Image (cartoon, rainbow, N blue to C red; front, top):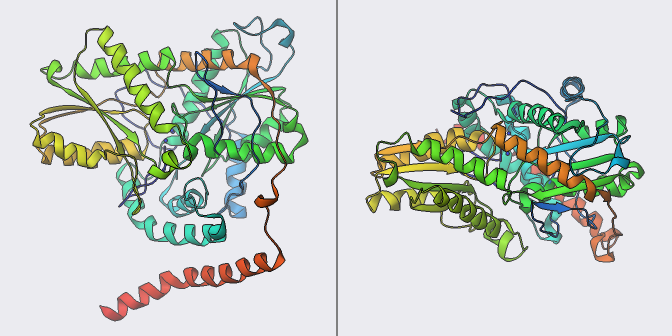
Length: 481
């Protein structure tokens, strides 16, 4: 996910942008463009092929996004309208789809995190990221501080983050790759006799989820499949985007009656598992002694409280995912040892362990000489693979005594992977149903007018202080120097 914060790290996992990425992937993506994004916490229902959700959704949380100047938004809106992967909106005898749906207009919404496309986008992108209550989870009493805190963090992190994006070409490739995946998925669906409109929704940058939703409504889609491009479910990724959908369903009569099927996770699908095993097997063959290589799975981390207190299934799903991939490799006679660690932590709180940087040092001390890094929670190249893994972690590994380093590319538009996503969409269609929302509890609303005014008063003071803080710090530094 594209929430890497250089100098320290941040929460999330997914892909789009303007630079070319050399990944060594077995297949290349074809050019395409699309539209908008999603993420909130939900319950989980397993089926044989993936987590398909069409249950009652809660309505808490805000989907408001910020840092959209009128001029920039107008430019982005024009680009978004020109970038939808528009295709035929009827299908014929699709596998697993009933014949009574022939006249329906099918839509598929791909959800991803988004990323800054230029260096000037970095600070507003970080603001949008940290303003999400699913990324920084403040107690209810202090939620009025969410936006001022996001302003503070994004202001101080932006300079270091800009250095990271500059090192990979000046922006994130996430949008470009996601658009390519959207077009590849459209083609794969057509081969299965399913014609649909494909939309792209980014959570924290253009094209935003709300923009994709607007286009879906304009196109009069009659059935929608929501497919987050995160193999494993987490509150901070798929969950946060689903929360945006919850708010839209609550407020819009069109979407409240629209049959929707949400594929919450798909790490356990055979197509995904085999595609990952294919890439690992190919990269192992490059080493002079493949059997001696340690397979090093590096997954994006989340704060430990997400798992232990909020019930996030991410860790369990990640561990099961690794077991499935290693099981597939063993069935092919590949018996290499492996380990799992978590990267991209940020702040003083405890995150899922073990940490990638610490494990790399330990492996070097134990005498491991050959290592193959596998970015298991990412299906697209972005800053966490291109900068964090390829630059930071590779340098650390070599300094720690590891002599032979390799890295498995992200899945991107690998044909077997895209074909399996298409199967997941076809299988999810029969489960689509109108989402229902519940009315918020009394405890969900503000207590009274006095409490609201108190929050606004202190929040305004803090916002004013934070607004001036960069100038104050700059003046202080100039005085000291």
